[in-house]
Image (cartoon, rainbow, N blue to C red; front, side):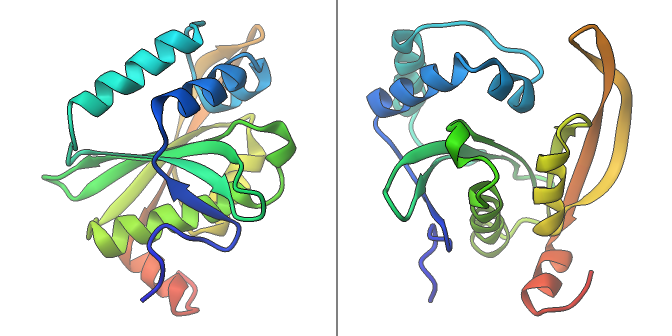
Length: 188
């Protein structure tokens, strides 16, 4: 059996609130990261992030939320996050990912983390599909998602304003059988 949360370049982990807050406040101060990762954000403090994480932990395990942090295998460095929001009734999930450390961009870490997350979603959780949204101005992320098998399913035209210009949001998804076909070397 394969190590569940281990990829070729990264591993998915749980982290202490202090560790998460220390990393995420640094990432949230990087406007390029924010513009690539989210459609809206709030400027906060390290204390606010830590308190929010602690409240999530206090709620206990939630079968519809699976948050992970991404650490490199080479130097065990915390570089990002990935998480699933699961709809148990329909057996599908939304995935969100962010690589916060700029020097970790374009190194394959996000693609590897997504592979691990999809393996968990389809093999362990038994989900039928996983979906995501990505901004049209982020072709690097689009290519990464396509590498692991996501397909473009739709587009919301000019739904977001960035730097005075309207831009689209792209919607992508991967089905369980498509993921299995890729694992067996088949084209989906």
